[in-house]
Length: 212
Image (cartoon, rainbow, N blue to C red; front, side, top):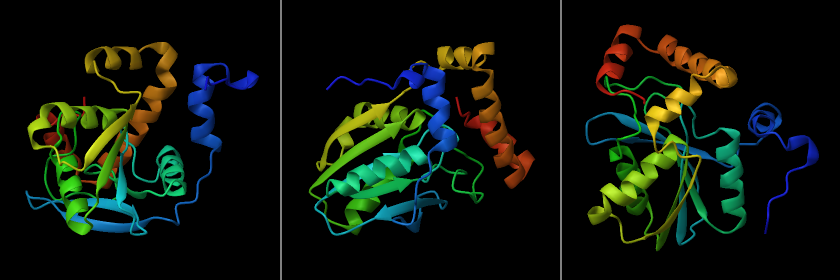
């Protein structure tokens, strides 16, 4: 099937901005869970479980979270097609400061591994599919490649969207005037995180664990 955008959505900027402003999604189908990590921190997860034998794990994008409209939309489609759904939050993205200095960055897959391991302990799923957006897609692909010798045998495939595989060129594009609105939105989100946490602590963490 070939995708045909409506005439008023032909522009890529409009396609990006319109749903983020006007798309409203109900998140009441999610049940939250907090799990501990091996380094004595925590991760916040959102579940929709109905004892299916297969699970989709959703990984959000840069400065996103598990209840963004694009995450909820994907979760809704998965649920309608008889999948359990697990959407998880990067450290510092769930609305509560994490305990450790380290935040998240595109090259780390350890938290995704922790989430997958926890899901398999919680329910003996026969099949797991991974879905990642933006930097979440980057983490997903890195896990499949870098951690290929440690992959859970239940993982049957993955889908990723808008993956910034070349982070340097992605940052250069984001800094251009035509993308000023996106840069402003990102910086506002980052400032909110800094205000939520102790600024000096988080800045030190970003020096050693940069987002880009």
